[in-house]
Structure formats: C-alpha cells, structure tokens
Length: 72
Image 1 (cartoon, rainbow, N blue to C red):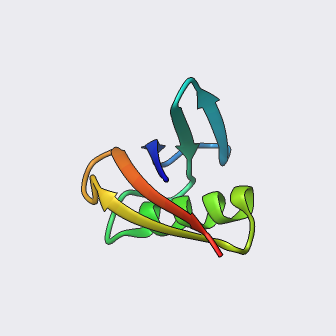
Image 2 (cartoon, rainbow, N blue to C red):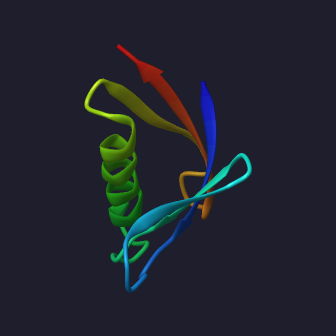
C-alpha cells in the first residue's frame, strides 16, 4: 500500500493530521541531512504500529512524499 505524505519541518508541535488521502506530518527538526525524513518515519511507525514497514519511494528531497507501507 502507498500513502501520500506532506512533511512540515521546523514545526512547534509534532503530529499527524489527515486530510482526505493525504497525511500532514509536522516535525520539529530541520529538513537537513535526512533528519526530517527520519523523524517523519518514526512518527508514522508510532501511528501504524511496530509491525509496519515504511519506506520512502518518492520525494526524498521534497516535502511531498510517497511512502510504501507494508504490515508483517
């Protein structure tokens, strides 16, 4: 399954908001050296559970991303 995510770096509050098919993920860290991507994946793992395998398949260097989500 694929999910569409928009990452909002340098946010005051971290969290995930759903709007239709898009997830907005707010992270406190900067979008440098993959820090925002790593934190986004941590927040998504907390949302979907420890059995969720998440992988960025599109948008590695952009705010809009496509995430592959598989459950084991």
